[in-house]
Image (cartoon, rainbow, N blue to C red; front, side, top):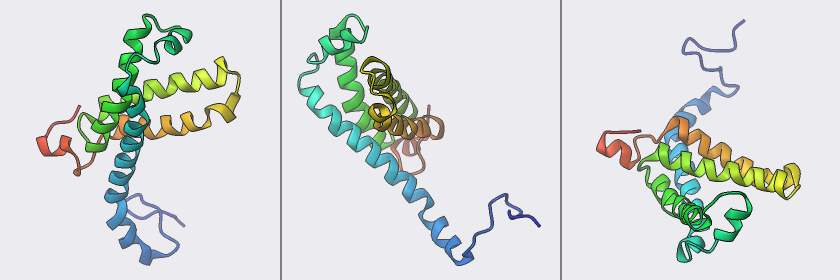
Length: 150
């Protein structure tokens, strides 16, 4: 006996919930994108005030010149978060954020020697951003309004 329907979706244990799941599917994806982008922008807001403030830290990670990478880090987190929240240039914004987060995974896990417990949040953030790199935004986005996506 098959546990999937003709559409390839699994049969629900409580079929009555199917309508609710279908109704909330796109909205929940939009909420995840807005929250992910919003929190990334809030995290970057302290950096955008002093965009060269992390120069020494990024040089300590091996990124030279530090002033360039510090500015890029600040803009990626702040403006990339806003773009992701709006669904504008969603994939490039998510990709840039993903790169930053993968560096933080390396930093916490390897450089600081904290292992999984130190990199756990960065891994979770990386997974969320990877989702939007692959998926892009849905119809509730600027990308959809202009009719173009990366």
